[in-house]
Image (tube, rainbow, N blue to C red; front, side, top):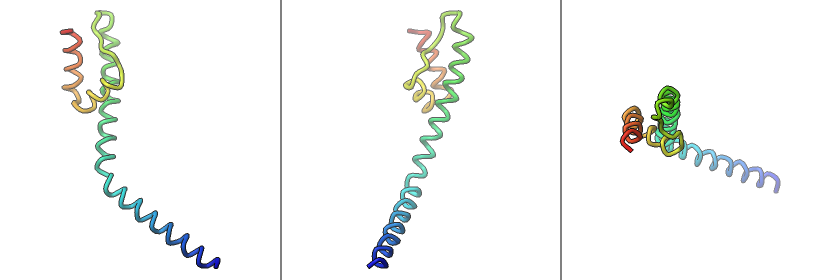
Length: 90
């Protein structure tokens, strides 16, 4: 009886490893894209922070929040420029 339970445990572990491997293969591109967008957003927010630091005394700044980070993450430098143009116009 103990051998049967050990065998079933080994089979369950093997199936779980196979499912995990398939998920890693399928989701690899999506995770890579998400990490790329997150890195772009973080770099963009750092750039926005530095620009805000220099431009805030002139009364020209944008908010540093999650929505702006996503916007900059998706669009990159053009997104950062668009945020500052929108802040200037509005």
